[in-house]
Image 1: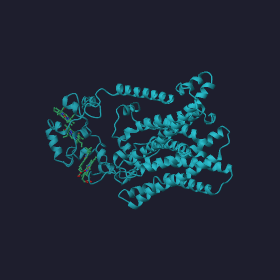
Image 2 (image 1 turned 90 degrees about the vertical axis):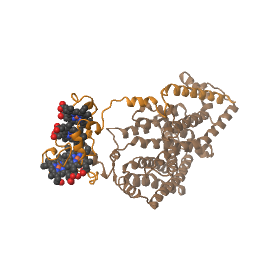
Image 3 (image 1 turned 135 degrees about the vertical axis):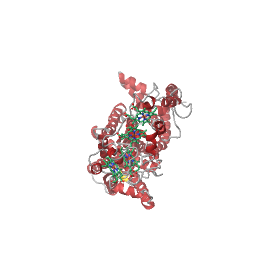
Image 4 (image 1 turned 60 degrees about the vertical axis):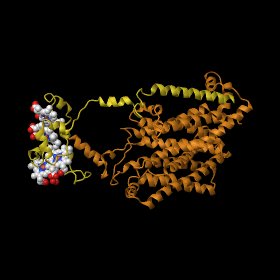
Length: 147
Length: 395
């Protein structure tokens, strides 16, 4: 074998050895435990702080509001879209107040005039013309808009 | 209220109906640079192979320049991707935990193969003998630099040079399909995105490949003239004419393939056609019809065709070639732009558009892209200083 080929093979062997070593040291320990990802990732994700719960959890205590809401057109909305994350509140409601979004423009988050959102799915209004400066909740009950 | 304001601001960027996640583009100018730069590498390498494998003697003066230019651009080819990552320092994870059924995750390996096994080896075998000689001539630090580059082999016997020649030839032969692989792969990535009708075509790898050759050849034409000018050397007009000839041929092929693709789209006119039609006549009008097709393809084609029949004086031809090469380089850049950015401008609902403005000051993707295009020229200057083709001992 010519000398330069031999030398090159040596260099390549060296590179491959380094790569193998790097792969060995850099691959996370739990990689491939369950699939093509870090097994530990599951643990990490499940240990992240929980912020949200479901409507059913709110209904345990606020059953009349939940019932009211579910009887109206806002039935599909989760309580937490309007009141913010509720996990802490459920754990300790005395020290963790929920947000109460009763200032004027809040409802416009969803009901604003928007050419890109289909009118059949969500009714849209012009806030100035429609509410004439009053808060939405003076006329609509947020939990049951037509009450 | 600023939530409403930001919503209105976002909505001012869109037209018609568009899904919320389509408002801002995920792939910006840096992702335009990625196929552009790899294309230049593949094209420059293929031009070098024309000389070596197909034995086109007229291209000899550009052989080393092509290889070194390919290497300079290859060294920055991964940069746009890495910079574009949200977590740039995790890119190595793709290499240590290879995912063999994901085309995107394989880029690292395609890249390493091409860089280590093809480009570096070919250059090494081409320069080995000269580096030995230089290591004997030079003094001080450079002596040891060259010694290290030769891997401490000082064999200059005729047999060893024959071996260099043979292996170099073999690597070039392997290198051609590898260059095709490198750039065909980049096209494949786009062609395989079946949800996007602007990208999803089996022609994509082939179109990318031919446009890569066009841009690579134009690049070498430009660099060859630039280097000769800076060194105050006479340009070998025969070499330049030959490059021009190949640029002409491949430009014809490239244009034919791209037209074929468009004609196919127009004739088939499937449900995505209306939106694509509005796209190319609207937001892409300037970059597609005027720059890519007009400046980047038709003007060079017409001029090169003219040069095949009439030979104006050397001076005029030089000016023509310099202009053409820049036109082609700009044209191919906008071809990448039209593919990458164009493919993200329309909604998957086929009912609306978003818009893209290159950020020069805020996200700086355009500025970074420019830097990434300029850096290879400095690398090339360094390589030409380290391994000057004009100081090679003629074989």
